[in-house]
Amino acid sequence: MGCVKLVLFFMLYPFLCQLAFSSSLRHLCSKDQPHALLQFKQMFTINPNASDYCRRSRTLSWNKSTDCCSWNGVQCDEMTRQAIELDLYCSGLQGKFHTNSNLFQLSNLKQLDLSYTDFFGSLISPKFGELSNLTHLNLSRSSFTGIIPTEISHLSKLQYLQTLILSQNNFSGQIASTIFNPKILRVLDLGSNHLNGTIPHCLGEMSGLEVLGLNNNNLSGTINTENKLIIINLYGNKLKGKVPTSLINCRYLKFLDLGNNELNDTFPSWLGGLLLTTEIIINLSRNRFEGYLPSIIGDLVGLHMLNQSHNGLEGIIPASLEHLSVLESLDLSSNKIGGESPQQLASLIFLAVINLSPNHLVGCIPKGKQFDTFENSSYQGNDRLREFPLSKDCGGDDGVLQATTPVELGCNTPHFGLERKSSFLCVDDPKAINPMQI
Ligand SMILES: *[C@@H]1O[C@H](CO)[C@@H](O)[C@H](O)[C@H]1NC(C)=O
Ligand SMILES: *[C@@H]1O[C@H](CO)[C@@H](O)[C@H](O)[C@H]1NC(C)=O
Ligand SMILES: *[C@@H]1O[C@H](CO)[C@@H](O)[C@H](O)[C@H]1NC(C)=O
Ligand SMILES: *[C@@H]1O[C@H](CO)[C@@H](O)[C@H](O)[C@H]1NC(C)=O
Ligand SMILES: *[C@@H]1O[C@H](CO)[C@@H](O)[C@H](O)[C@H]1NC(C)=O
Ligand SMILES: *[C@@H]1O[C@H](CO)[C@@H](O)[C@H](O)[C@H]1NC(C)=O
Ligand SMILES: *[C@@H]1O[C@H](CO)[C@@H](O)[C@H](O)[C@H]1NC(C)=O
Ligand SMILES: *[C@@H]1O[C@H](CO)[C@@H](O)[C@H](O)[C@H]1NC(C)=O
Ligand SMILES: *[C@@H]1O[C@H](CO)[C@@H](O)[C@H](O)[C@H]1NC(C)=O
Ligand SMILES: *[C@@H]1O[C@H](CO)[C@@H](O)[C@H](O)[C@H]1NC(C)=O
Ligand SMILES: *[C@@H]1O[C@H](CO)[C@@H](O)[C@H](O)[C@H]1NC(C)=O
Image (cartoon, rainbow, N blue to C red; front, side):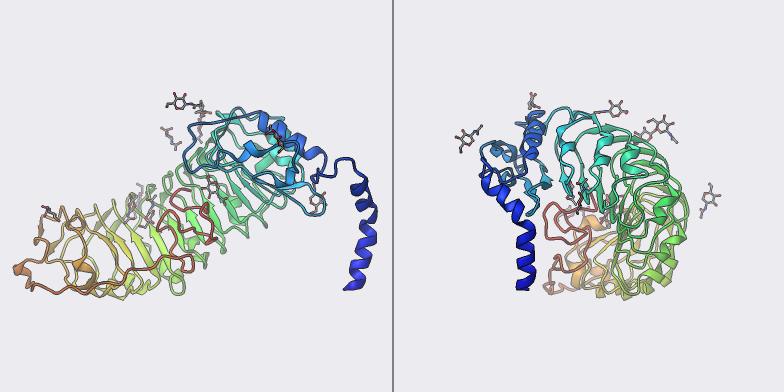
């Protein structure tokens, strides 16, 4: 150990000397860095209207006479004193983002977050592709427009890039058919833009991908999936036909949102193969699903939330749902489901949300446990369903209600997508991605 330290000391000795004799000893960050940062800052004004929780003062503290490594939002490498992280998330920056921005002189950047800012519909500079050490790039909701330059998405120098978030901008055009380093990229979020064309096949080759957000675009085609995916959000596109059977390869899947597309299929009971070990949220709402909910649905024991609302489902609600012991939310609203709502549902002790309205249900609402806590809005629009709360016709007694245990939604449990704060990567970071946003 000591020996290693000694060797290190001699290796660094010339460097230390240089530091010691440097006239600007206080300037710990590498020379070119403050200049580049300040010039970058000067391109923008601070938006006085930025929302209250934004840290508008971030760049105000940037001052030539202090060490740039100590500036808010800047982090330097300990050894090289070069900026390796720049986090100006929600800092109120406002203005045109120039193609030749001084930002691109900070070539050692590994993490760059400029999300939640306002670049006035600037085109995204191909020079982002020159920040070749980037591992994380977050440009979500920053008013970029145009196409996603191939320098970022294609034959990329960004060989270490793990997280690319370009959601909630005004990107249009197609997603390049060869994109991103297939092995490294873990999070790809292009949600809420105006991308169109087909989903490129290469997405299936990204063997490391865990989070895929392409929701709220105009994409069509299908997805050849990869087996590391944890989150797939394709809500609000133009997917047609059946639920892609390749999803069965996604052994780690915890959140699947195919809602608001043009899928016409029956309930994909084959998904059961996925649901034996992990808990999963499935959203197939606002499509053209038909047929019955099969009784085999009771085998999908990992089903945590199911949203099949706004489809054309018929038949009855299978009593086998009672086996879904971790089911917390069931939305079957706006279908054509008839029959009675099975009393067995009352045994689902985690059920916190149910929506069966409107459908063609008849008879009585299950009673007891969770069912004593649901509002009548859960059942409205089922004309022949007996009144709620429990009517005498349904053999209701006054039912002393059992207090129900609130379900804890923490980061330690994989309750993806339940609330804005629960992050689906489960990093304890309030900024963490929210599957409902992407
Ligand atoms: C801030 O909001 C006000 C009122 O909506 C608007 O008049 C003003 O132009 C906005 N300022 C900026 C810099 O966006
Ligand atoms: C920079 O910091 C120095 C010393 O703290 C202070 O005197 C000066 O006013 C600051 N300049 C700006 C532009 O904030
Ligand atoms: C990227 O990082 C490596 C060390 O991790 C460094 O040697 C290299 O110079 C960096 N590249 C650039 C363009 O800064
Ligand atoms: C969004 O992109 C379209 C097409 O590229 C463009 O016409 C429009 O001006 C952009 N809108 C904004 C707000 O940048
Ligand atoms: C999808 O395309 C339609 C028709 O071209 C257009 O009206 C709609 O705004 C587009 N949606 C998105 C999210 O780009
Ligand atoms: C994608 O949208 C653009 C307009 O933004 C349109 O010109 C083009 O035809 C669309 N492509 C496809 C495949 O829909
Ligand atoms: C889906 O739609 C296509 C074309 O309209 C039709 O041929 C097919 O039978 C439909 N499939 C299902 C399961 O409804
Ligand atoms: C789809 O439904 C799931 C489960 O109910 C829910 O978590 C998710 O937020 C829904 N997606 C959208 C876009 O509303
Ligand atoms: C089901 O999905 C729809 C979007 O299609 C959403 O509005 C609704 O809130 C979801 N239901 C539940 C219970 O999350
Ligand atoms: C639903 O319940 C509220 C009180 O909780 C009641 O005021 C309302 O009339 C009920 N609506 C129907 C349609 O039963
Ligand atoms: C990226 O930025 C968006 C918008 O500010 C934020 O919601 C999200 O948490 C950020 N994601 C990461 C991984 O930093």
